[in-house]
Length: 313
Image (cartoon, rainbow, N blue to C red; front, side):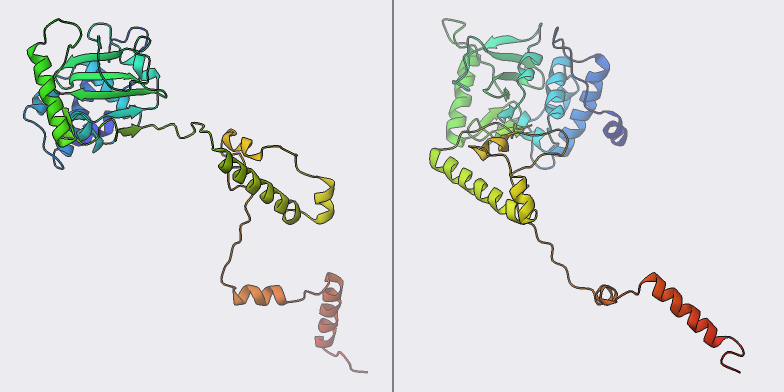
């Protein structure tokens, strides 16, 4: 396999249609297969997988390819694929993935204990089986979507008596309790629900402040604005053009303008630039240039004195 050609040509596949959720096309699936195989070969140098992964990757289904492509689209790095395939718990701050990964032919509702704060009747957990993901499980979070690969599928609540898969799933849970690691299809991962992997985190999520912290922040911003009134302009202009009087100056910190505009948290802070003084620049700035009229008159006098016969009777 030409690894250089695969890395250069096989860019992350496009987003599948959310209306039918059928997975990727045959060409896109083939590109993801080649890319995943290369990523597996690279990540296997840092940590071993269970046997059979490369053989399974050659049979990657369009739905499995769509899941891996979706993770890549949200920033999955090569080294992170190892934890994903070994059962790492992944959080993606994109709720659209929940519907995107609900495939018509292969997805089925699942019962799990993950993220119990979510209304499971409105957003049930979704399972899917595949040769690479074995048992993919995903659901909604308050801000997006979570996904985790499991070694053994479980069907609790769908049958009266537990099946062999349910018993194997319980054995995997015992391994999790002993090792504090998720049991994935191709190994163990320390990235559990309590310590997950974050992709595309929404850093601009508003968070409420406690009253003492909010009061201290508002006082500091008021003090900065008062200092700016004196330092940013002359005293008479500052009196003529006062800044807007806001009851809570911290309210504007959560707003962002288009592009790189915006005041920001430290936009009004005083900034000093210190540099080593240049002797050449200091000498040039220290010179006192003559007015143009005086300089022209001096040049004429110099020419007249140097002319032949100057000063003879």
